[in-house]
Structures are given as C-alpha cells and as structure tokens.
Image 1 (cartoon, rainbow over the protein chains, first blue to last red):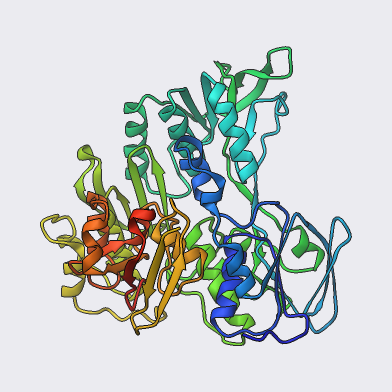
Image 2 (cartoon, rainbow over the protein chains, first blue to last red; image 1 turned 30 degrees about the horizontal axis):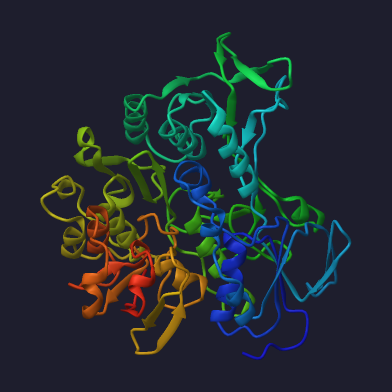
Length: 427
Length: 107
C-alpha cells in the first residue's frame, strides 16, 4: 500500500483497542498515515495474562506482544512508545496537534482515543507502604511477580476478576491467601448469583479464605516502610506481607475533558464510536457506549477484550468512511485455577434462569432469559455451551428454556431446531 | 527457525518464519496473516484460531486436549477430521514446513 502524505489518524493509547483500530483501518484500505502513541515503553501487548500465566505460569513478557515489529513496518503503522499525550490543540474541522508530556508534537487529521483505564486506588492510612500493589500494566505485573516470590501471606482486596485471578495465582504458588471484599458476593458486577455462589465454594475448596462485606481501614507497617498487616473496617487485623488491590478501574477521561467531549463514566460515544464533537472516536475501556443489544439498558462501559476489539473495529470503520453500528453482544472470560468462566451476553434484567450441567462436577452453565428470549449464558468449564450461546446471540436466535437443561442434546442442535425469532436490531 | 505456510480459504498462501516456542496462532496474528483472529490470546476461550491441518502433518502435532476438542465442536465453521485450534500448536524445528489452511469464517 502507498500511504498518502498528510496527517491521517493519531491513535492515543497503544492498547488492545488502539492496535485494533490501526489494523482494521489498514484492512479496510485506509491509506492515510496512522500513528499510535503509547505511554508505556513496551510495544502493545495483551493484558489478560498479567493476572494469570505471567504471575504463576512462567510466561515471559515477549509472549504477550500483539504484533511483530515487521507487522507495523509492513502496514506502515508508526508506533511511538514512551510518550504520554498531555494536551491537544484542535481546529474546527477535527484536525489538530497532540502534544506529549516531553513536548513532542503529533499533528493529526483525525483523533482516536483508546486510552483505557487506571486502577481505582484505596485511600487509607498506610496505602503507600511497600507491598501494597495494584495491577494494570506489565511493570505492575513484574513487580507483583517479584513480591509473590517472597510473600507468605497475601491479602487481596476486591472480589472481581482481577482480585480472584491474582488470588488463584498466589494460591497456585503455594501462598496463604485471603480475599476481602465490600460486596456480599464474588464478581457481583459481572455475573449473577448462582455463579458467585459456585465460585465462593470453589475458591474455599482450593484453600482461599473469603471475607465479605468488609473493607480495609488501614495498612500497618513493619517499621521499615513495608506492609505487615491489613486492618479491616470490622476491626479484624489480617497479617499480610503482600496486599493486592483490585477494586475496579477508572476510565482515563482527562484528554476528553480537556477537549470538551461529553464524559459520563467514560468518554461518551454513539453506536459508531463517535464522541460528542462529531469527529473524534473512542473505543475500549475508556468508552461509554449505548447498549449493543436490545434490552432495558442505558449507557455502559465494559472492560473486556471483546468489547475493545469490536468497538475498535466500529471506530475504524467510521474513520474509513463506512458507518457500521456496534451490535455485538459482549463476551468475556476469566481463568481461576482450573476453572474457566466464560460469559456471553448481558444477564441484567433476566427473568428466568436455567441450570445446564452439574455444578458439583464443576462443569455447568446457567442460561438467562428475558421475555422468553435467551439473553446470556455464564458457563463454567463448558466452552461448547458458551460458543453456542455467543453464536446464537450474534444471529438473533434463542433456545427454548424448557429444553435447555438437557445436556444429552448440544445447545447448538437446539438452536438449529428452533424457529427463528426475528429481532428488530440484531444483524 | 521453523517455517509455516498459511493458506486462506480462497487459496492464497503465505509462508511465515516462526519463532520457536510461539504457537501457530501467535505467529499468524503477529505477522498479520488474515483468517486467524485469536481474540483470547491463546487460552482456549474463543475458538477463533481454527485451522485445517495438512493431512501429512497431522501426526507431527501434539495430541488434542479435551477442552480443545470441545471448543472445535463450537467453532464458527464446522470442524473436520483435520481441524485444530492453532493456539494449541507450539512451533519448533520439528514442525518446520507445517501447512495449514484457514477457514472462511472464524466468528
């Protein structure tokens, strides 16, 4: 491809979404310059393994890289690392110049924001002690891996995916692990009650202690600047030589705010990934978007690979001059010990659920229905069910709830057998 | 370094030099080979790196795990006798010359 001279697209954020915007632009024949600017020094990489295989499986950081250097060169995608964009100056037509903290200037015709999110931090006495860790990027993960090698008693704050994946990794390394969480059940934002209850018992069976409904009050030091214990709001004190905090992430909206873009728990975009200025696009963890599936949902923000990739494809289509709406049902996964959790669709507002398989065998799925239509599935060690539901949601199909519990019949077969129920806005 | 040939559903071939230890999926994605998505990064969660392995190469591959077998049942394009998930094929000099064909659909 011969790239036209000019300013093209500047992608701020060398993230999963950022790399996908660039790649999708080239796949669609976009022939203007593309530059990706990233604040980290590592070339763009996968984040999901940071809480799993990188911590306990001996994975190297090189194994995480999305693309080879030759790929960026061949595709004429300029990758600039170690530069954090601090300010953006813009003309009325959407073009402008982004300026990094070091003063480097990046002119652009169009701007794509794929800036991600940062970990929500605890504010409490002792929060700055050594041995109180967060996990977001490669450097965090390498530091945490180093601490885990020496730690004996690990306390994890937060019972979401990151917290539980780190807890499982630490336990697999033989550490004593306690998880404390403010919620009354695990992964409350992501899954429904039956899955939370299953994971509670499964983690306890594997030797993890769980304390619900409590928060850290303060971290106590050992006199040499390192954490030795965590005091909880109920007065208990847990010995800890490593505290890992996984209490959610906050979208990076500073640049959007500086640009005067609408922000509402993320950078507000429409179904084409376009922000409120009508020209800038945003995708991934930083974006707040209208629900891609019909249902009683408002705006949402998702932190998952699949939404980052799909939104990036949509944003790239917009930049390339083709309007493709975002209509893909979200899906995500979490690996904890030997338990593979895979979720497809949005279960909120469901009015019926069907359990398929045997929770005692640690292999089962829960299917969720809204108004008699399949809306979501949460699957444990049941990839076939997950794939069938993901595919069904993609093409607007359902499976009768009264047949779904019969594990002698593959879901895929049931999907093929049911009469199509047309759904107004599913592709 | 092992060489691997990826052929698309429409018959276009591309030979890629792999880094030993990388999977066939990683090799394809890192080098921008179309037809392989690998959205989950190789942890058996997405089934978007389905390939058809050249019959002559089948015996050279490591055996299939139960979960790979199950995932292939749910792949977007129907599995065949020579189907594998390319994230489960670690490349080494022993696999030099491996040939795989990508399906028409991964998603």
